[in-house]
Amino acid sequence: MSHVSVKNLCVNYPLYQRAPIPDKAQIAHSEDPEHSAFNHRNETLIRGPNNAVIGVRALSGVSFDVPSGGRLAIIGENGSGKTTLLQVLAGIYAPDSGEVVIDGQTTSVVNINLGMSLEASGHNNITLRGLAAGRSRKEIEARRADIAAFSELGEFLDLPVQTYSAGMRMRLNFAIATAFQPDVLILDEWLSAGDAAFRKKATTRMQTFVEQAGILILASHSRALMEATCDRALWLDYGQVRAEGKVSEVADAYDEEMMRRQKDRDARARAELDAARAHEAFVRQAELDAQKDDGGASGDAPIFLIRLWHTFLRLAGRQR
Amino acid sequence: MTAFFADIVQGIGKVDVWFTFAMDDMQQRYRRSALGLLWIMLSYAVFVGGISFFFGAFSEVSPERFIAYVAIGYAMFAFLMAQIQDGCQVFVNATTWIKSVSMPFSIHVLRSIFRAIFTLALNLIVAFSAMLIMGWRPELVALLCLPGFVIYLINAVAVQYTFGLIAARYRDVAHLMNSITRIMIFMTPVLWVREEMTGARAIVADLNPLTHYIEIIRAPLLGELPRLSSWIIVLAITMLVWVIAGVAGAHMRRRLPYWI
Image 1 (spheres, rainbow over the protein chains, first blue to last red):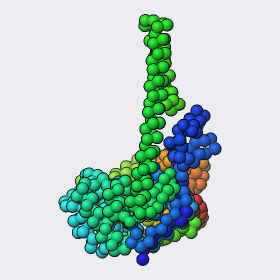
Image 2: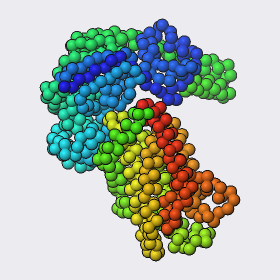
Image 3: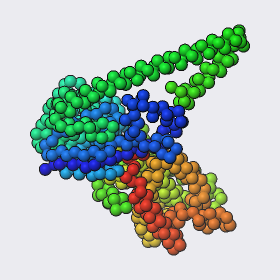
Image 4: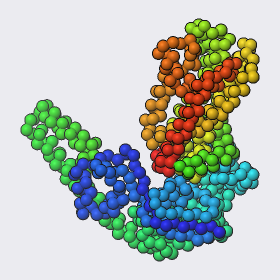
């Protein structure tokens, strides 16, 4: 019997010399209560001694259980920690604290561009992926025809994966991941990128899979897909569990909240745009004034300098 | 630390995985060239021939012996250097697999070592062919190179794993190592004979660990007993390398997926 149990999981995603050190104005700006729409997100940043961002609190205090045959949908905004959670469940990222217990063989397809050797042919990739997932050559050969049929790639399987379109890669990836009947299947939202025919086929396959008491954990933005394949949903918000329950209920609450947030963000974006326009007008006025003062050819230099100065400020990220 | 050693043991157990991955790497590298793997042998033959022709004149050793000296010595030198250079890339190049499939990291190390062994084998085919033509015959003492090669492999696992971790975290290390390996060819008695040198050059050669690593394989194949001091130094460095690997593995292994 397969089983997934996660207790109080915390994952900090470290950043290495990728984030600039903010100046005081920027810190004040981000702490401004007027910008509350982004404050939650900023709270997930981990700051070092000089206030530089050194990491992201990707997941904090996440707990849930999926029993045998359970089908869990993971809902959340972009950057809410869905993919990180899936990668922890797949055993790729080690948790900083908390406990992840998975009984059963796991297969995950978190990113369609990963887990493939691009120069190798489709057939070679079936072998490599099968071996990497801990399958024997005999098992791989036994499933090869099925993978080829499901992916519908035909003779393309003899060509390097480089030559495949994104959709073809997705088909092959999904076909390999589901062919070996893992106990736990972990899929990220890329699935909804397929065409309608493939989505239908994939949904049917996932349903057959869960009927065999396998566990499915699926991150998705597609409500139709989640309702068709999952029985429960987990809403991740800024790395924390916001709600867990029936798919329709959680999805309703999520949609409502997203609508509200989007309004906030639109208002904020409009305000920022207005401020930027006002600033631009001010600069233009300053340029005109400078032109008037100096007059003629000599006026070109200050305008040029002002422009240069503002370009510099913008490049340095000191001005919005 | 236990997790690090468990990772290595599990990885070694999955022979089929790293062997297949390594073969796939080799195929890809030469897939679109007409001569394919022959390029490795061809370029080695040209290199050894050229070196023997130009550098042989500076040595008092007979031409046949100098060719054997260079052909074996440089193959070993290249293998040892490959452990450091490939080691720096071993995890970075495996990003796609490390980030998508949970399997022992040592799989990638073993895959990389196997690739280097493959190249070494091809180089040695060239070396032994040339030597046999020049009248070289193996003596009983040549068997002593076998424990030497086992030591090479034991070192290779620790060296590649350590450099793989460090170079994944600090990307400058790969560049630093590249510049160091370039100078090593001159500081190691491969193109020149250690016994013919005196003074500072002799001291540099004796302080260079590579001198001793090459000695324990090259000397038996040339019909000499390797110096005991070389064996002792090699064994001591091997232990040191594994201690460093253990410490690096214990501290860094868990974070590796975030770095690449």
